[in-house]
Image 1 (cartoon, rainbow, N blue to C red):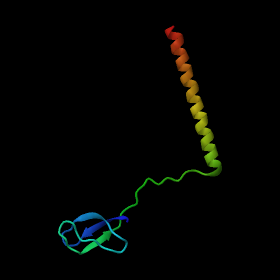
Image 2: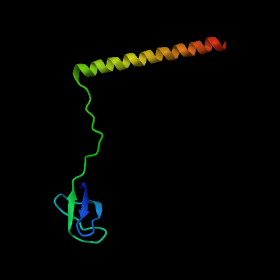
Image 3: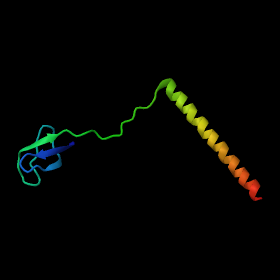
Amino acid sequence: MPLYDFHCLACDCRFEAQVPYGELPSCPECGAARTEKLLAPFAGPFTVGVRGYAAKKSDATRAAREEQRAERKAERIERRKHDGA
């Protein structure tokens, strides 16, 4: 069963409850049956990735950056070995 947000019209309490679609629970604070379902935003994050040519280009760009980083790191290690020796 889905989890919904509710508002009690009697005591102004906000609460969550798991109930079947179309049913309204009673308030957990005051026990009143006069509740209303609240609209809640969907959980996220929703991301839309790139597709097609843009995805291939993005992957190629990322691979090139990673290769450049690896080369710079290797150069730094060599410099440290050379300077320290």
